[in-house]
Length: 196
Ligand SMILES: [Fe+2]
Image: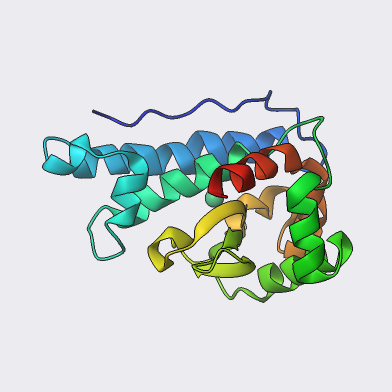
């Protein structure tokens, strides 16, 4: 069963000016779609063809298809967490948990930004529930996904340069400012509720 390219749940211009149409045309239409195509080519006709995308990722980085499976999963998780008009702050149990762990929402964002700007090269910065069920901010390099370290992803920021070079050139901190303007905490809250 081939994996299909998921449509974005918003128009290509919906996240402007923070994430432009041109960025989405390349990031979703070329980079992400390319990972899906390469994943399908790698597993076509094999036993892995029957596994879900997440189960393919959970097989781990030693498999030949891991990079394309994880990049497909990571990008779908990333793109689906944005909206033009969503909650720009966490609420309910997630807001309480963030305040308990990081002090308050502003301090959480500072810590997340520091982690994301500190990631050398390409990768992803995540808010996760760790193996003990505690909130944590972690980085993964390249295609890495925290599920392979026993953690549950709640939210992610793609810090590959292809995510921001068109709009922000090399300025990852400026991209992060825009990221917070389009991230929908309703979606993150749903992941948190499901994980708990
Ligand atoms: Fe990306």
